[in-house]
Length: 215
Image 1 (cartoon, rainbow, N blue to C red):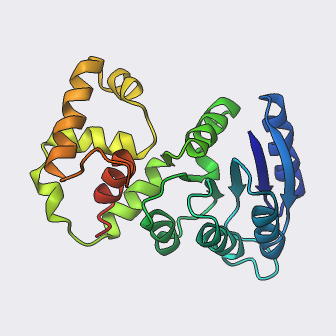
Image 2 (image 1 turned 90 degrees about the vertical axis):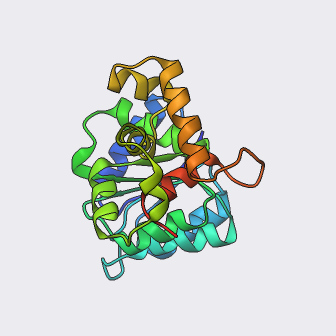
């Protein structure tokens, strides 16, 4: 993959570059400020980008704003947000277009290189990769979504793991169920949520949006 890494801390940025290259990926650009991030994303249009939230010049939300601006100009541009904080409003805005290709991890939750690269690869393929802590924050603060009331407890459990970016096979392993059982749960869940299998939307992404109570 061609990747842009946006992180203002040199050691962390350099470490991610070496890690990604060790896994066979190409880092086409790095950025240390919000404006540099936006320029790199629009210039290179990478297969995926890793973007910190708080970057210079003000150390507030420049990185996340750059990611949002880039996705407005390049719909579906794959971005994995890596942050020390859960910015709920902007996380919802990133998910709102339903295009997928979004990840949001807390730095403290990344325990090894394989986990990090696997999440980035899922995002690059148009999926979602959400930190459980981010999911919990979004769900707890969101307005009620009556469509979720139609789901069984097990279907909600499957949907929560889907939001993390897990495949059906990975969900089956986590829940100690068969692949066919998970397939039945997801099919039932999509039906109850009114998500049809067409070219206008990724059902897994739309189901995650429903889980996060995005209208």
